[in-house]
Image 1 (cartoon, rainbow over the protein chains, first blue to last red):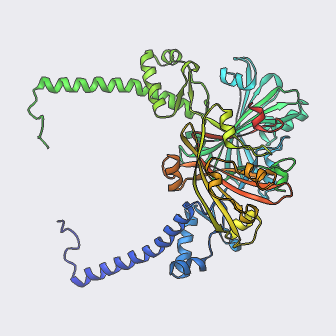
Image 2: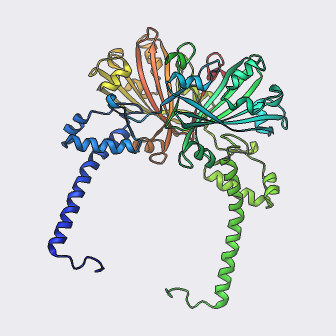
Image 3: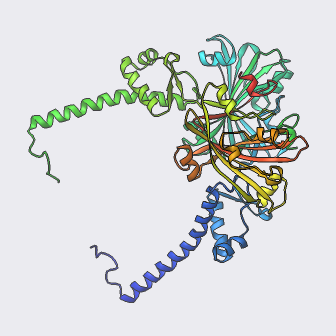
Length: 272
Length: 272
């Protein structure tokens, strides 16, 4: 037994300390009971992203605790990022804030999509380099191995929160004279294709999957290393069927979801 | 100091043990050096899902090790599920094996989609119950809170490997007489809608996001609890615009990706 420190405390002192401990234990248990209940509720599958959870009053009645206890538990889960509180709209299961359309035929700049959500887009050109295609990239772009490719990497943010690292690969022969400067102001590639190179582009095939972020991607997106992220791969073609761009983006899954719609023009028109 | 066990070993014995340890350490380091190199390569972002990695010979040359060392490292990473080896096709970064179309207008049974991939589909009815809509579900289905809803949960497998837990919600008044038995044989809902209830359905809106699996979902999909999974939510409508089904599925991200295509008829026709 270790008798060091406080071994001379009076019995009263010890009792008081124990009572305090019990009390704080009991208090913790009450919040935790509510937190645990909400966690179980969320993981039961009954509630999905964006769903409203029951009101403070309903939870208090259900769990036989007072509303302050519920408020504290909810507030803790909001801090953890599990729930979202939007003032009068009640409390919801945290959901991605930006649904990117994955089915529109014509390219639309990300900046416009974000503005449509009433948010402020921004982007940063991370690098712009001339490279040569390895066999993989050559396959993807329908060019010969060793041919020149322009590689462009950009970081996109909404309201200054980074949400996507986007890497584009373009056969260099299609974009003679393209320079980093052309992209600095957040110029969209499809607009450059159209206006400078007179290539009308369409979004052809897309694949959405879960991938683990690299160290660099995690750092850029401000999420833990080896997080699961939404990977989005897109093949852009000209109207004659030539692949003009292969793009891969890695998206913060707390911010981004992808949507498709049967509405003509795709998700974008369905949500407008 | 603990002198129990082996404290009487001869100096020679100790030296031999140390040499063995060093040797095995060196051996381990050689494999690990190669494994580490491949891991860095994968997390650099240069290689994505499904990409071929350099050949055994190229890696051996590059890292100044023999091919057996490379083979061992690659074989370890295949066992870990990071790489995939498909015989003559070389070694690739592990990729989802089943790209589900997220853009087809007309419903197609999952079973047919899987058969198109040359694999064997199967499904298990987990539950079939009559429930009442809470406010959330009522919003989603466009019905009144408290109205009856049929809830159907099924587990889908490819080649006996579970990949998706799918929960459908259908306003009960649209499917009078529907029973669990009707779904036991893996009958698709869209076929039941069409043939028994004479409702032509279209796939309306879809949202694809990353969600954390619940304990139950993890168990069913045989993945770790709190894994990131691909969540897929789908609204099915009749031709007059009535919502006939709200479906949410949770998909194993090692097996499933979602695809969209500009080809007429969507991804399905693009990949056929």
